[in-house]
Image 1 (cartoon, rainbow, N blue to C red):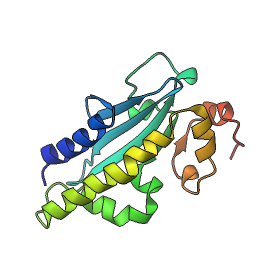
Image 2 (image 1 turned 90 degrees about the vertical axis):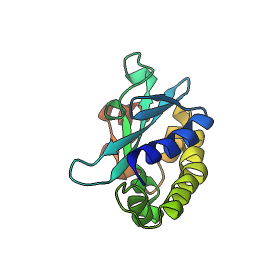
Image 3 (image 1 turned 135 degrees about the vertical axis):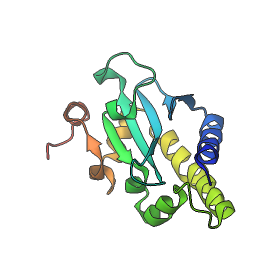
Image 4 (image 1 turned 90 degrees about the horizontal axis):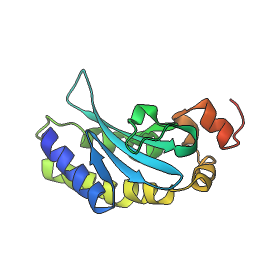
Length: 155
């Protein structure tokens, strides 16, 4: 698989679900928050990372396309779907020949059956509060202002 194929598969899945693309990121616009999925190329290898973020409108400047690094909640996709950690890492290697067709199918399945439904389930501030009880929730970055805004205890 090459990077163009990776981006095409990701883009088709997300665009058909209502995401808008800008740069290396796709955005799901909601009244209270913006869901962000960004592809990040590893500087030292042939793999990509999938970063997921949530930008809380009430805490930020007016920006319909915030970079993932500006999001108030930030995760690597494998920290949310930790049961697929190894498989996700293998899916996102862009130079290996291996079984490309199988990896593309796995990536499509991950996007369609896990990532898109996840974003669709987190569209409001109440949804963010609900997922704060998930086991994976502490495994990412949570901005101090977001922690306070969501009413979460300090760590």
